Length: 116
Image 1 (cartoon, rainbow, N blue to C red):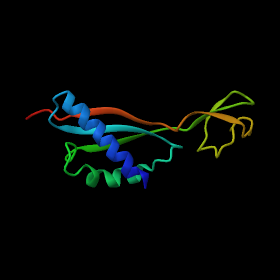
Image 2 (image 1 turned 60 degrees about the vertical axis):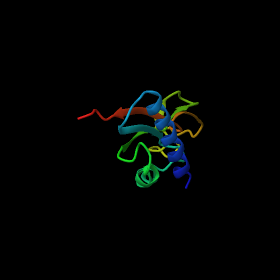
Image 3 (image 1 turned 180 degrees about the vertical axis):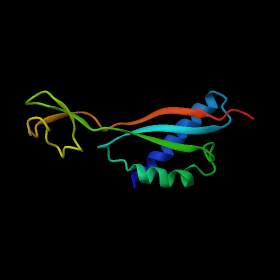
């Protein structure tokens, strides 16, 4: 379950950015996860509250956006979703492709909580 290790590092990174910018409260952190990455979004969501406990992000939310796994077919040069098409180009049925996206893990946004 490397998701916990990833969450710990993500929280440290966000806390450091918050401290450096004098931010007292984080409302939401938004991450993007590639469809073919080894990170399981469900586990990230499940483990986030306990991992964030006792940190600046304790009352924050985690939002996950998925990045589609797109590939470029080496035979017909079409871009297609690798997962939806089970690794075969829907145009020419070839399985010789180059991955263009879908392996990422990106901290996209830190949403701060405005003081009341």
